[in-house]
Amino acid sequence: MISPSSSEFMSNKMKININSINNKFDEPIFKAYSSVASHAIDRCIDEIKKLEPTCGLSYKKEVEGFICSIFCSLMNSVNNLKVQQVFDALRMTFTHYASGGLYQLYTQQENGEWYPEIILTDILIPNDISSLDEIITLYRGCNKSEYENKCFRQAWTTSLDVARSFAYEKYLGYDGFNIEDRVVLVTRYSRDHVLFSNQSVEYEVVINTNMLGDVRLHV
Image (tube, rainbow, N blue to C red; front, side, top):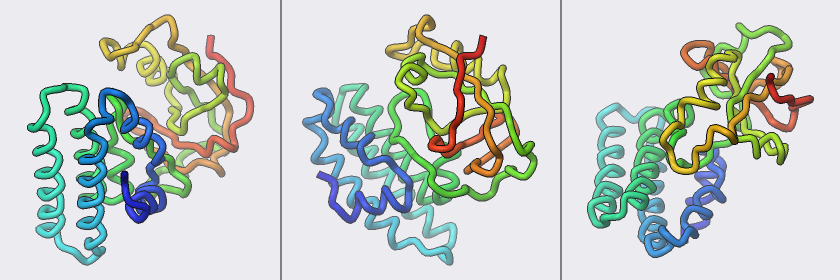
């Protein structure tokens, strides 16, 4: 079990939804490894807590190396690819945070296989929010269950083409992907409630989902 202090650090500093980790650890395929994974997380966070803003690049590299060694050792100890993928996702999670804080953790996260869910609650800096119109049209490519359950995620885009790619192309070949279950959503949203924006490549806009208004299926 992950220690309370580590859980608090991940929730408050790393903005990780702890349930996304606990639920993965409770899955039958990973349950036998949850104890060693929890211990590894505690050790990594203990090292990360030693980092200060004044720490030089060399010390950050030491911490990254420490994290990599822990999770690479765990990956090498098992032959199950699904288990290895979880260990690797945890490795990336903590090395990203050690290297560049919350900004790198969020912007470099993986979206294909399992990855701890990051939920932003404050504005992430740097950003280009000021470049957005006061009211913006946003799109999201996702599974139709998200629309049916009205349980929307934070990452949207100002590009319809990008949303279509996420809906119908990006995850082709991944377990559970069914193009018949994929949709593109559209909404209008106030710039005042945007938490992050990067209007290049994927034209991403991260929102406070509590401030969402009408969300429709894009036709």
